[in-house]
Image (cartoon, rainbow, N blue to C red; front, side, top):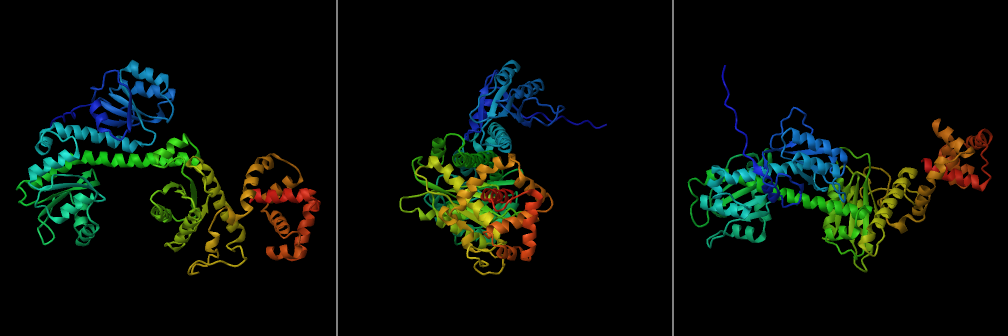
Length: 562
């Protein structure tokens, strides 16, 4: 029987080093009974099962927040199985439950929380990258490239330059320069332009794409060589990866001298050493984006402190603003990217615009200067019109909320914009694609024949008129209707259960102001058929259509029940 040599465990990394690596604020230390030098060997998810060993692990407890007393037992269980610490979800604005703090103190286990704006995937990636970065700096292989362990990408770029003999740039996948080594006097024009501009010029990216070099870079795990040509000196490049995911690339250019014979090997090791740093960069960016998203959501939905949210978004709390809501048809095909395109269009409308994706809706916060109030409706029109020109022609309706005097009142503008969209949607449903003039509307080409004019797809409060107040009234009276009883309630409930023919007939009759002939034409029935249905309503349910209160109640009931 062949014996297998046991694999030694990974060396432990001090908790303080993990916290130092986290410059995005994802983790917060609440308690460390054993001190911050407690060793962490790996990251584990708390629901991996009772048989999973947790020796030296930092355990992510996904199920319960730190504010819940129920988190105390997972903390004790992790400690019993040898974990170094646990990470709980932070409930924004709530302190950790006393029972949880006591459990960590008694068990001697470190207790941390994950920021409300972060997610567990990013948290796990952060801890793994911190472990890898610390180990790369302390190992012999890492020291060969980083000269004892680079503490930053700039130091790493300088170390790579020394070992390759070239000028180094470390870039993300959007070709932005994250770090670079010193630029010599004989550096080529492309390097100078890239370093000074902070990113690779667009013409260069296009050239790399056409030549197929970018495809080779993103798919290869080895160093790629580009010979010197009229555009620049010899270059080596390698992709930086975290597992299968590409995080960026490292470029080495001959800067007035030849690259060293071992430059390619040094780049391979450098890519491994750079991966944790690029993960941290990506987490920092995604963390910033999530914090902005949470601030914008809080401002638009009235959650938390509005003034703090405005400052977080880089907006003056006293600045006038308005909200545009663009809603996609709920029947859009899977994978539809209409709202993604509209978001890009909204952001390009003005640098100060902020955009939030909320399911099938796009919420756009637009700061408004004095005299530019019409820009709000203009943006709504632009988004609705653009949607009609995209492949798939997914219907989008856009509502322009009112301009409010301060960002602190953005919620009211957002709510009104959403109501305007609702009015547009309900109008379209009632009219069956007929516009306000009673004519079948067409878009720019009229090819799809959907029969809804562009002008019926966007509006502000003036554009929808009294319908906006009607929607508010209906929302207010809905609880009264649903809890009531009487002849009209009996009629509506019984008839809707049978298919709703009588309710539709009553609605057409009331919409036609009691004109039987006009209502019958709309229903496509003979006037005598409609008269029979109206008589049946009176005889079977005791509903008197000559009574104005009854007519009002039926009108409300029809609108409330759709």
